[in-house]
Length: 394
Image 1 (cartoon, rainbow, N blue to C red):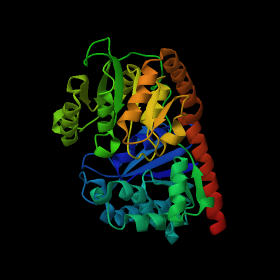
Image 2 (image 1 turned 180 degrees about the vertical axis):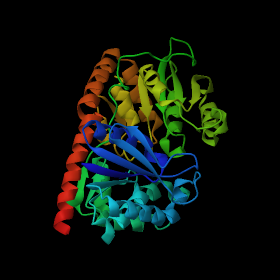
Image 3 (image 1 turned 180 degrees about the horizontal axis):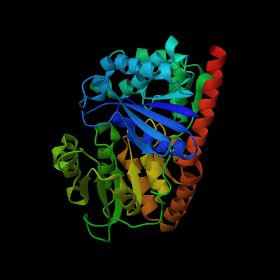
C-alpha cells in the first residue's frame, strides 16, 4: 500500500518512526508528513527503505510548543491537499488530534478524491482535562474538535481497552474503532545484554528503576515515598529535560524535596534523560521497574521492561491494564498509593524465583504480542478496513 502518515509534532516521533520503518520492511511505501521545525532540513529525506519524511511548511520554521500549533493546521492541510491532488495515497494515518484535522481537511477536498483516513489520538483531551484540570494547556476547542474528527475518520485506532471506553463516552461510533497496541523493538529491548550498575548506593541494595517524563502526573513522587518502606533498595530515576543537567528541571527539584521529606534522599539518584540506546541496559539492571502514573494513555515503560525480562510494578490505569498481566508479568497497584506500591515491591524483592518467572513471562509476552512486526501487520489490516469503509461512504 501507499501510506501517508501525518505527525505534525515530534511528540509521537519514536512510535511513528518504528511503525513506518516496519511497514516499509513489509513492502509498503510510506511518506511521513511532519511540520518543518527549522530552516535546515531538506524538503524530503529518506528515513528507511520504503519510507520518506516530508517536511511541511506550516507556520514558522522553528520549534513551537504542541499546544500552540492549532493555528497552523489549516496550512498543513492545504499542503496535503496539493500533494494528494497530484498523487493520492491509498490511506492516510493521522497521529494526534491536530494531525487528524489536517488529514481530514485534505482527504475530504474534491481534489484529493476522498482519501481514507485512520486516526490515532495517542492522548485524549477529555482524559487530560479530567486529570490535569486547570493545568491543561491544550486549546479550549480541543475536546469539541476531537469529537468531530472521531466522527469524520473512517477508522479510529485505540491503543488499549481503556481508550475504547473513553471513545465510546465521546460518542465515537463503536463500529469504527479498532484496537492496535503500541509495539516494542525485540532486538533492542531484550533480556540479553549489558547491565548499567554504576552510581547509586552499594551493590547490596536492590535497584528499582523509574523511566519517565518528569511531570507530576507520572507519579515519580509515589515511587519515592514507597522507597521509605524499602530500606534495602535504591531508586534510579531516568528522564528529564533535553538540555541541561538533571537539576535544571523544576520537577526534579520538587522530587528532591519529596525524597528529603521521606528520609530517602541518599538512596535516590536522578540520571537525567538517557539516549534511547542506553535504556535497555538500565532496565536490565533493575530488580523491579516501577511506573506509577496517575493516568497513562498507553505507557511504553512496562512493555520495554517486560521485553528486557524485568518484572514491573505499575499503577492500574490506562494501557497498563492491557500490557501488564497482573501476577504474571508484574503487579498492578492503585495510583497515588505508596504503601500499596511498597508492599508489591517488597513481595517481589523477597522472592527471587517469582521475579525470574515474571521476567521470563514478560519477555515472552512482549515478543509474541507486541513486536513491531505484529503491530504493523495489524495496522495494515486496519488500513484495508478503512479503505472499505471509505468506499462504501463514497
